[in-house]
Each structure stands twice: as C-alpha cells, then as structure tokens.
Image (cartoon, rainbow over all chains, first blue to last red; front, side, top):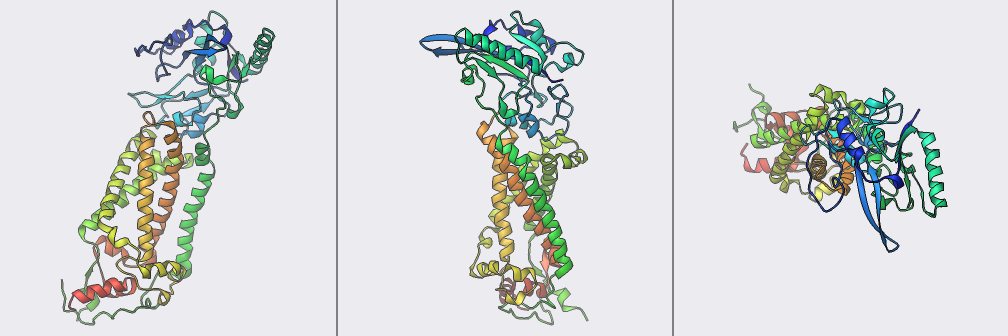
Length: 277
Length: 211
C-alpha cells in the first residue's frame, strides 16, 4: 500500500504547528535565522528544518492573497535524489512509497540536492550528510500518522492510502470549482511519476505562485549519466582493454630487428662506444 | 668484451620529468579507482576497499587537485615539445601503419611521436574539464544549480575519455613497446631503441654527442 500526504492549501491558516511538531518529533534544535520581513519561519528548508510553511504573497486581480503552501520532501514515485545518488543503500524507497535517507550509508556528496527537482535535501555543515523529511517513517512503520498531520488543527493535512487521498483531492477541487475557483485542481506532477505529497491548489495552473515547480522532472544530465553514459563507458573501457590484448595477440610487440625503420633512416648506432657518460 | 649497446645510454627523461610523470600516474590511478566507485554502484566495492564511500568522497577531490597541479607542471615542461610538426601530421594519417608494425611507411618522429603528442593534449583538455567540473561538484551547497547539472554529466564524460586514452598509454608503455618503461623508470634508453622509435630525436643526440 502506497501512503501519501494530502495538503489542502485552502485550509491552511499558517499556524506553523506542523513545523513545531516536525522539529519536536525528529528532535531537532531550532537554529535562529534572519528576519527578512516575512511571516515565514525561514526563507528555505535547512538540514535540521524539514517542513516549511511558505507564506506566498501574490498580487492577483487587484487584490493581495496569501497562498500558503507546506514545503517538504515530495516523496516522488520516480525520485531524482535516488537517481543521482552514487552510494548504494543511502537513499531507500520504502514499500509504502516513502523515500528515506539512511545516514550510515550517506557519503555526503550532495548529488541528491542536484538530482532533486524540488531542491529539498540539505547537507549538515558538521556531518556533511544529507537530510530531509522522512515522512516520519519511524511513525508510519508502527501505524501512526506523521507528526505534522497529527498536529494540524484545521484538517488541512490528511494522511492515508494514496489512491483514496487522490479521490478526496479531486472531490475537494470540484467543490472549489463549484465555489467559483475555476482554476482549482490537484498538484501531482507526472514528470516525476507522481508524488506522495499531494496538494489541492486554488490556482492549479500556476503552481509557481505556491513556490512549487510547474513541471518537475529528473534532470536530463542525471539521466544521461546514469543511463547511456554508463553503457558508453563500459563499452569504451572493455573495448580498449580487449582491443589492446588482441592487438598484442595478433601483432605482438614492436621490434626494431623485424619491423623496418621509419622512412628517414637515421645513422646506425656505433659498434664501439667511447662515451661512457 | 662488453656489449656496446649496454654501455651507451641516451638520457631520455631526467629525474624531474620522471617524478612528475609518476606523481601524475599515481594520483590518476587513485582518482580513477575512487571515481569509478562513485560512477557505478557495481564498482562501489572499490570504495569499500579504499576506506569506504564517506572517506573517498573526502579524498577524491584532494587527489584530483594534486593530479591537476602535476598536469600543470607537466604542461610547463612539455607543452612546447608537444606541438605537432609536418611529419607528425602525416604520421597521424598513417596511424594504422604504426599499429600494424609497418614502420617503413611512417615519417620519422622527434622526441615524442604524434600519438604521444595527441595523448598529451587529450589529457590536458580532459584535466581542465575534470578540474572545473570537479570543483563545482565538490561544493554543491555553494554552486548554482545550472553549473551542478552541467558538471554532473561533464565530469564522468571527461573521465571516460581520459581513462580510455590512459589505458592505451599503459598498453603502449608496457607490452607494445619493449624497453619504453625503462625510459620512464630509470631515465635512459639504448641507441637502437632511440633510432627506431624517435629517429629525429636520435639524430639530434648523435649530432651533439661524439660517439
């Protein structure tokens, strides 16, 4: 069974209880940031801050609206971090769809940051290893819902079976449409095979206004490296090694006695040396 | 009676060049093993052998810096002598003659033949690409995403070219051309070897040495 989080952004009141619950459950210390005139706790995710409510102030139709969105790991079906990771066992897709980081196998290269189309993982400045939301895999494993969901006071967040949540999301988007929000819809980007974090958005055709990428995909340079380039490298390495070996088998080593001299023959060496240097 | 060939030694690489070459070779070897380990999960056992993935992620860039610096030193020393002359250009069009031991069909080579010169320039270009892309990959937190995306493909691509040409180089320097290893390990070659492989270089040596 694939589990998912549904975030109905229309119900978020920006209370940030989910941020606190995430910090508490994962036992992370809060590090002070800078105040930049926003209600947002931090400008970006951090290695020890995995769940950020973005307070997107958007000018629309002559009015300012506050489009809340909850930013964290999207737990993609086709995960860019996993595609880019060079360390076996460091990023593990669990049977329930969670993308989990296993820190004893992480080598701290930061390739996951480059592979992630949502720019989610962060390196710890001390351990140099990558961290992000675990979808509370230590809670879901024993039948509990993630900490952020547990604490949400408005039912903006729901946890459950993915297919059921998708149906709920579509129903909710239909309600919003009936209420006059013609552009309402579900954010479940197909470029990464769908995500296990689903959003209901009032302005579904413009996810950028919520700080979400419009059409996230695994970067083609990562796919090139992990796909055709592996074949090319394997072919070239083995081709050269085998080519050299069979060249030797067929032609043998170069031999001045047998193989004739280059066109412009130099003088032959002397028979008796008088230079002992 | 002594064997005259054993008495005449033509100096080919001085100690500076030999140390330079082997520092490049050793750092390249280490960077290749650790790089291949991170290139494919199938080769990750090399990382385990060399101290684990976390360790090699730390050491690979530093060893890469050593390699790049030595390549810089090598370029300073050799770049001038690596320019292709008219004979070299003809040589390159007759490379198949070289591979099939038809040496009579080849124009004479100087201190380095055209193949060695091509290896030098290939390595120098690859080193520049590896150094620049490697630097970007070293510090993912500080580098713009567009550069990281470019480097994540450019680094292995340059490495494939570099490793492949080094495989050829190792074959040439060991099995294919007997006694060439002595030049790089001990620094000298014998007259007959020099006359066959590097006739123009040998002539110059003859002209300035009374033998």
